[in-house]
Length: 169
Image (cartoon, rainbow, N blue to C red; front, side, top):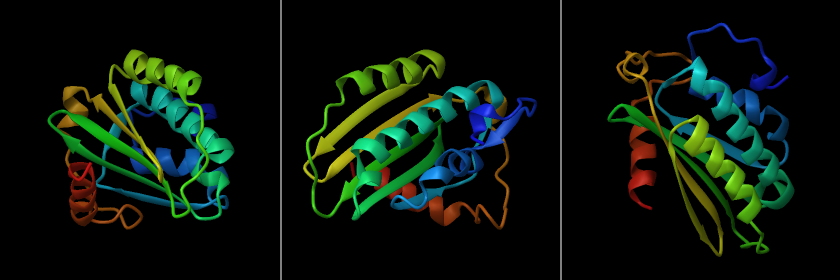
Protein backbone atom coordinates (compact mmCIF):
# COMPACT_ATOMS: atom_id res chain seq x y z
CA UNK A 1 0.00 0.00 0.00
CA UNK A 2 1.41 3.38 -0.93
CA UNK A 3 1.00 6.59 1.03
CA UNK A 4 -1.43 7.88 -1.62
CA UNK A 5 -3.88 5.06 -0.89
CA UNK A 6 -3.81 5.48 2.89
CA UNK A 7 -6.70 7.33 4.52
CA UNK A 8 -6.09 10.98 5.30
CA UNK A 9 -6.58 12.32 8.78
CA UNK A 10 -3.22 13.34 10.20
CA UNK A 11 -2.45 17.04 10.31
CA UNK A 12 1.11 16.39 9.12
CA UNK A 13 3.26 13.51 7.91
CA UNK A 14 6.96 12.91 8.50
CA UNK A 15 8.81 13.35 5.19
CA UNK A 16 11.10 10.37 5.80
CA UNK A 17 8.09 8.12 6.49
CA UNK A 18 6.40 9.34 3.31
CA UNK A 19 9.54 8.62 1.26
CA UNK A 20 10.04 5.18 2.82
CA UNK A 21 6.42 4.25 2.07
CA UNK A 22 6.56 5.37 -1.55
CA UNK A 23 9.98 3.79 -2.20
CA UNK A 24 9.30 0.47 -0.47
CA UNK A 25 8.45 -1.35 -3.71
CA UNK A 26 11.75 -0.26 -5.28
CA UNK A 27 14.18 -1.12 -2.47
CA UNK A 28 15.32 -4.32 -4.20
CA UNK A 29 15.83 -2.57 -7.55
CA UNK A 30 18.89 -0.57 -6.54
CA UNK A 31 20.62 1.32 -3.79
CA UNK A 32 18.42 4.02 -2.24
CA UNK A 33 19.84 6.40 0.36
CA UNK A 34 17.82 8.92 2.36
CA UNK A 35 19.35 11.82 4.26
CA UNK A 36 17.72 14.71 6.06
CA UNK A 37 16.58 16.23 9.31
CA UNK A 38 12.98 15.72 10.43
CA UNK A 39 10.45 17.66 8.36
CA UNK A 40 6.72 17.45 8.94
CA UNK A 41 4.74 17.90 5.74
CA UNK A 42 1.17 19.21 6.11
CA UNK A 43 -1.39 16.66 4.92
CA UNK A 44 -2.60 18.95 2.11
CA UNK A 45 0.94 18.82 0.64
CA UNK A 46 1.64 15.18 1.52
CA UNK A 47 -0.65 13.64 -1.12
CA UNK A 48 0.76 15.58 -4.12
CA UNK A 49 4.30 15.10 -2.78
CA UNK A 50 3.70 11.34 -2.47
CA UNK A 51 2.35 11.36 -6.02
CA UNK A 52 5.51 13.11 -7.26
CA UNK A 53 7.80 10.67 -5.41
CA UNK A 54 5.80 7.70 -6.69
CA UNK A 55 6.07 8.97 -10.28
CA UNK A 56 9.81 9.68 -9.91
CA UNK A 57 10.45 6.20 -8.49
CA UNK A 58 8.41 4.45 -11.19
CA UNK A 59 10.25 6.45 -13.88
CA UNK A 60 13.64 5.62 -12.30
CA UNK A 61 12.70 1.94 -12.22
CA UNK A 62 11.77 1.94 -15.89
CA UNK A 63 14.29 4.40 -17.40
CA UNK A 64 16.72 5.48 -14.69
CA UNK A 65 19.04 4.27 -11.98
CA UNK A 66 16.65 1.76 -10.47
CA UNK A 67 16.79 -0.08 -13.82
CA UNK A 68 20.61 -0.35 -13.61
CA UNK A 69 22.72 -2.69 -11.47
CA UNK A 70 25.13 0.05 -10.51
CA UNK A 71 22.44 2.65 -9.94
CA UNK A 72 22.30 4.85 -6.87
CA UNK A 73 19.34 6.98 -5.85
CA UNK A 74 20.15 9.54 -3.18
CA UNK A 75 17.36 11.67 -1.75
CA UNK A 76 18.35 14.45 0.58
CA UNK A 77 16.32 17.24 2.10
CA UNK A 78 16.53 20.15 4.45
CA UNK A 79 14.23 22.78 5.85
CA UNK A 80 15.18 26.35 5.00
CA UNK A 81 13.50 29.76 5.26
CA UNK A 82 9.93 28.51 5.61
CA UNK A 83 10.23 25.83 2.95
CA UNK A 84 11.91 22.51 2.38
CA UNK A 85 14.24 21.51 -0.42
CA UNK A 86 14.32 17.93 -1.65
CA UNK A 87 17.15 16.75 -3.89
CA UNK A 88 16.51 13.60 -5.99
CA UNK A 89 19.85 12.47 -7.36
CA UNK A 90 20.18 9.50 -9.71
CA UNK A 91 23.69 8.38 -10.59
CA UNK A 92 25.42 5.33 -11.96
CA UNK A 93 29.05 4.46 -12.31
CA UNK A 94 28.70 3.30 -15.91
CA UNK A 95 26.85 6.38 -17.15
CA UNK A 96 23.71 5.33 -18.96
CA UNK A 97 21.53 5.57 -21.97
CA UNK A 98 20.04 8.92 -22.91
CA UNK A 99 16.40 9.06 -22.00
CA UNK A 100 13.61 11.36 -23.02
CA UNK A 101 12.35 13.46 -20.13
CA UNK A 102 10.11 15.97 -21.91
CA UNK A 103 6.67 14.41 -21.32
CA UNK A 104 7.53 13.09 -17.89
CA UNK A 105 9.10 16.34 -16.76
CA UNK A 106 6.11 18.37 -17.97
CA UNK A 107 3.74 16.35 -15.78
CA UNK A 108 6.10 16.51 -12.81
CA UNK A 109 6.54 20.26 -13.24
CA UNK A 110 2.75 20.75 -13.28
CA UNK A 111 2.46 18.74 -10.07
CA UNK A 112 5.31 20.54 -8.26
CA UNK A 113 4.53 24.06 -9.44
CA UNK A 114 0.75 23.68 -9.43
CA UNK A 115 -0.36 21.48 -6.53
CA UNK A 116 2.68 22.01 -4.31
CA UNK A 117 3.17 25.67 -5.32
CA UNK A 118 6.87 24.85 -5.47
CA UNK A 119 9.80 25.03 -7.85
CA UNK A 120 11.47 22.28 -9.88
CA UNK A 121 15.01 22.45 -11.22
CA UNK A 122 16.52 19.72 -13.43
CA UNK A 123 20.23 19.03 -13.86
CA UNK A 124 21.35 16.22 -16.17
CA UNK A 125 24.82 15.04 -17.11
CA UNK A 126 26.52 11.91 -18.43
CA UNK A 127 26.30 10.05 -15.11
CA UNK A 128 22.76 10.81 -14.08
CA UNK A 129 19.88 13.10 -13.31
CA UNK A 130 19.33 15.49 -10.42
CA UNK A 131 16.06 17.17 -9.57
CA UNK A 132 15.76 19.88 -6.95
CA UNK A 133 12.27 20.49 -5.59
CA UNK A 134 11.55 23.42 -3.29
CA UNK A 135 8.18 23.60 -1.55
CA UNK A 136 6.96 26.35 0.79
CA UNK A 137 5.64 25.17 4.15
CA UNK A 138 2.75 26.82 5.98
CA UNK A 139 3.94 28.82 9.04
CA UNK A 140 3.07 26.10 11.60
CA UNK A 141 4.99 23.40 9.69
CA UNK A 142 7.89 25.72 8.94
CA UNK A 143 8.35 26.49 12.65
CA UNK A 144 7.74 22.97 14.02
CA UNK A 145 10.27 21.77 16.58
CA UNK A 146 12.69 19.10 15.45
CA UNK A 147 12.42 15.79 17.28
CA UNK A 148 14.74 12.88 17.82
CA UNK A 149 13.47 9.52 16.62
CA UNK A 150 15.67 6.39 16.46
CA UNK A 151 14.42 5.63 12.94
CA UNK A 152 15.07 9.17 11.77
CA UNK A 153 18.29 9.87 13.63
CA UNK A 154 19.28 13.05 15.35
CA UNK A 155 18.88 15.03 12.16
CA UNK A 156 21.87 17.31 12.68
CA UNK A 157 24.44 15.23 10.79
CA UNK A 158 21.91 14.36 8.08
CA UNK A 159 21.07 18.03 7.63
CA UNK A 160 24.73 19.00 7.33
CA UNK A 161 25.38 16.24 4.79
CA UNK A 162 22.34 17.27 2.80
CA UNK A 163 23.29 20.94 2.97
CA UNK A 164 26.76 20.13 1.65
CA UNK A 165 25.36 18.11 -1.24
CA UNK A 166 22.81 20.82 -2.08
CA UNK A 167 25.50 23.51 -1.99
CA UNK A 168 27.81 21.43 -4.22
CA UNK A 169 25.45 21.54 -7.18
